Length: 256
Image 1 (cartoon, rainbow, N blue to C red):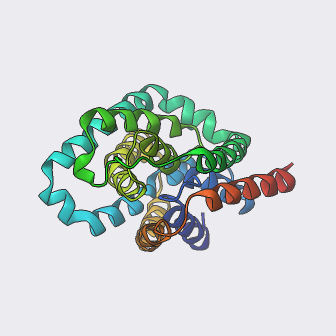
Image 2 (image 1 turned 120 degrees about the vertical axis):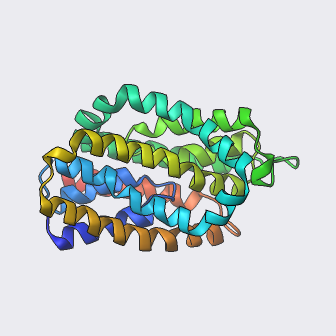
């Protein structure tokens, strides 16, 4: 993997991680277009550069994390379902799901249609939870269940948690921010588990590629978070649904 490859994938990871368009699918498809051969390192790279995106959340929300301990407990509660599912299905995801790019393409397509339908029929309740502190432990666990669906590449962790939270009566801005924070234990655990199992097979140049992807994804993810928070003030997620459908169709046309 060249420096340019690492940079491109880092930009893609940083920009897409917190948007409801699936960073994993974009990384898989971009790797395909760049002509990168599927390997254990490439699959680990696509998982591990999420650490850069995690760092951006910590950088932007460290005051919230330090001052609101009850919120941290709810984040951990929401993480539990995903941790259980991820631990049991780790090999399936890495050895089968990440090997087949069509899974990502069709998940992008299906998710795009569902996003559009959701925005057409969903009506936000007047009594919705408007603050992070309003989210109960029961709802936090339920959000974690929704998030666990995103082990399938192309589903999008952000889309699953945000739409799930809105169905539970949580306001758009609040669930978007909770999704950011929930990414910290979720992606840290996924990356830690993968590095623990795969790090011995990496060369020095592989670690340099990981470091490059980390730095780039951190910078771009910081900008992406700010973009999404501003975007949702005046827009819904229909645009992302249309985008997912277009990307899926383009890739089906190019790669088949």
